[in-house]
Image (cartoon, rainbow, N blue to C red; front, side, top):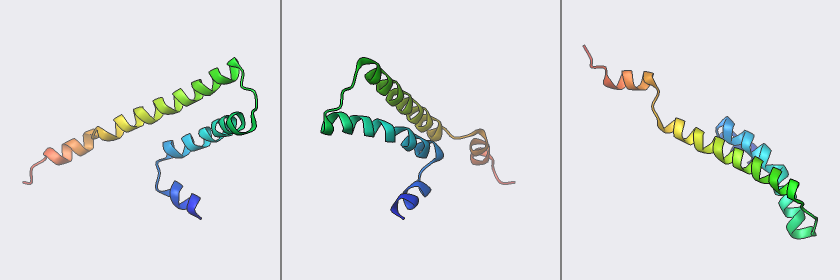
Length: 80
């Protein structure tokens, strides 16, 4: 129930990022807690996925702070 309430308040981009972060968390926890090996290729893949998720989140945050042209038009229109 908590999961569904949480994702209902997030943007679709944030929810899809959570789906990509689950395998990364499993790999990191397996390495840290269980002593599983992480080779160079695994580390490179982990960093690539993490970097892409951060880039998408950063770009989405920038786009949401910029008003769309409709909002600008409505804000500058004077009543007749």
